[in-house]
Length: 243
Length: 157
Image 1 (cartoon, rainbow over the protein chains, first blue to last red):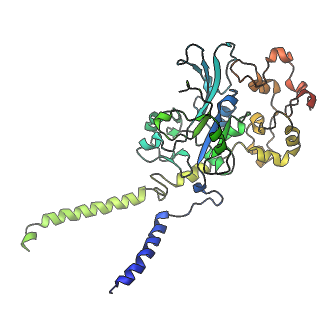
Image 2 (cartoon, chains in turn yellow, red):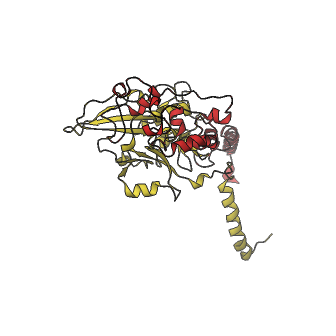
Image 3 (cartoon, rainbow over the protein chains, first blue to last red):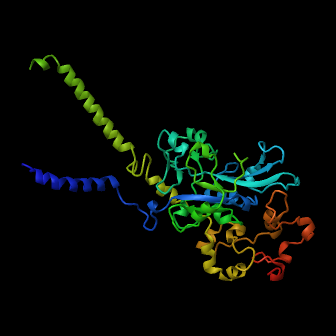
């Protein structure tokens, strides 16, 4: 069979379109939730946190986190007036049962809830030797526990200390940003349980999400910006002494 | 054909290589999950598996579907934006089957103190009391209705 130049010029774009379809793969299965429509993040309003530990308890209940391990925890900072660079930081049992009453009025206190920063360029996913941890198309950093070997490279790679090896499953475990909830139009367990609204789930791809206005008008930071991790947990009025 | 003279051993070797490569492809086809590489260098099906985790906190929208009276009581008070399960705990079981799963009423002496115990560490504007001095051991709901805690909003109900 002889193909003329005209026929080739007609066939090439058609083949390109067909190849595009092959590359795109099968469409996503969930009917109401489209991963490409979201880019999840979280906003933590530091001055609103009262250190009650509700988020830590809620997270452990929702995600069956074993005792002594934390997907989220709360730290209390006490920065004295004369020694800014050495804040006293406590987090008894991750702040799960609250904090001891502080009587020393001197200096400044504040609570910093910590969790996985859901980094866009996460160091933890880059070091995984088997592709068991990854950033989803909607911006959550997850662990495929059936694929994980438990080598703990990712535990060491996380600059925020947000991962641990699950004591029974012997695989890496971490905050999923309550992926099973946010894909069903619910907020995360920690946000649901926070009594003061100090934690708010936010969707950076949703133009109507209040986070855009908030970031424009407030002093918002991420943790360890010098690491260039693309962290997506934003802290309002974060003190310079927080590490 | 002098080029291929005495080169049979090379062809046999090449044949072995081809066989080994086919065997590799066959094994790879079995052991690499079908969804691997669907979105990136990971198993695409893992996303759906993680999303299938059961829910424990029903979410305040579910609560309000039935408990509109509490919602009305709350909305004028200081606790308007405190979600139900912040105090009552995870109750997805109750939302799914209200008859058989009954929540336990929280003990206000413990519950209220978790947030409102006075501490120099808390934000200054947050209402806080030393429970021993404030109520002399009486349960909080003697004077405060937890859903709308201002004194004039009425006590225990």
